[in-house]
Image (tube, rainbow, N blue to C red):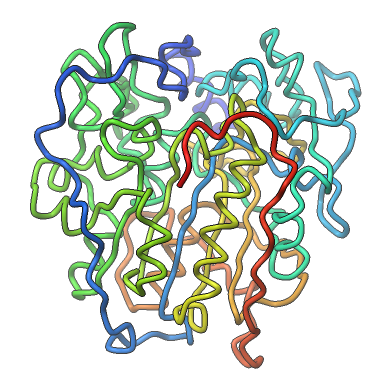
Length: 441
């Protein structure tokens, strides 16, 4: 109870639910001037992954992060998984009706305080917080609406006890995906209309601040630009190459380029160009064999599955990326960790364990695809984004970052390293997508 009381006390001093200007949709106009530091148009150099000792046969890890879906919303009907088809709305049962794999008409509230209200001390019945939430929060996709994700869950490993690292939206959770912490941030940086900002990082206008809670529980507003240690730094210490693929500075989706909020990368052109690459080149670089041992991937906004955009096109983009890996030489020693960054306002019934004042957040899906993945297993192993970092750390003999990754399990229940490596199984793209794709990759 002391932990729960602390969590709510922090919530009272933290930022209130952000309005449309502070949500993920990044609807501001494009910047009037380019960023002083731009990503290199060239791909990462190919490396000999066998030159680096690993504790498993895995020589490549790909951490692919999509947007704003819960486990019950995508896999609540998956056989053998811990899912439901009826949710709770203010203590009253409410069926999870068939959702849409096309675009919703508006975003669903999913700020930090919004997530605490949805969680409601573990009652998981506070998701109905707005007109858009009433329309969309209690929806659930069916098998025919996510055929390739469902197929991968059937062929590889699906985790049904995996949670976002933090209560709330994208910014803190993407930081957890690279550092097992968020620098004290619970929410997205505040963006005033008219600032013309497409970033959540060090290159944001100086008026754009984020509220953080320090170790003493004091809340303050700071620039979203941090100096804490990241997984990339641990890899650098052992001279293990890594890369981060994301939208470019002038593209929607750059808000998820987590290293833009790490000062020594964002403000050092050489480091930025060594490790950060345009996601539009991703498939080309995979085909060229140029992915390093560890790669993070976040998509363009329009292909992220953020609920204002077309889920079908987003699933096809994921399929293109995974098919490219499967058809490449790297498939034979790769583990792909595919997840969604936060709950996005959608319903989930599983109360997240509260391990500290930040989370866990509401449950999200996790798929693990690999030649060494068990076939069709639904794992109940507890996990969060720090668990992927723990796998990387254990596999390459790295040190640890925070209490989160030290306590995390490395998701080994997904694998059988004694089995014969399974051959690739590329999937066809969906042909039932409706509406514009906005651009072609």
